[in-house]
Image 1 (tube, rainbow, N blue to C red):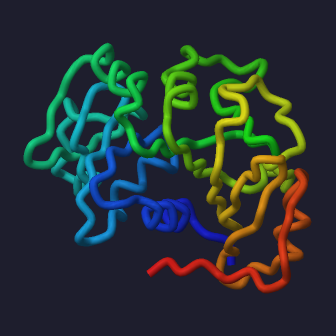
Image 2: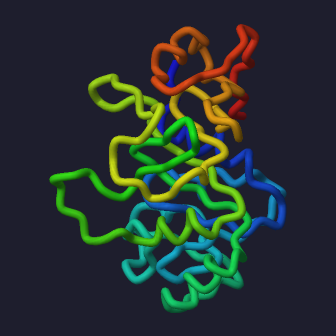
Length: 220
């Protein structure tokens, strides 16, 4: 059974290590804040100028002045700090962030990412993703494996305008956890519960390396 968006976020949260400073991008990555493992001390950064994000607020407890980069209301934790975007991107460009979690429209088998523009559609601007992919020490992509038409979004090469080149190392989708190999191609590490290796192969247009004993994800 394919994972929900929350399931993707829950699996990615297992990649976060104690003491990490983590940037959460727009979309599925913002959900990761709800699934930080107990006993793990991390600091979540939002590129619009916040260090120390907590989980999403309960209904009725929202503060419209506290938002993440996706303009969703969030909570702050004890010791949180708020600052301007210049300081925020100073942190990012100085590689102070240990892990960046981004959404994507497409990822290529070489680790290229396209996540900022679909030709013909209005966008407000490039946003901060280009700084993040150029500066991050480690990037995990949270994305859907296929689009609404069932077409693969893990491709030999991206068809959309690129955000970054050869910068993605790991991807978590509703179907699988995959590494991007240095020599090119996707390596299947884990599969969603009940999803077969063959099904993932059919859903992946880029080069995929997988054996028949790929374990299922453990989410709890």
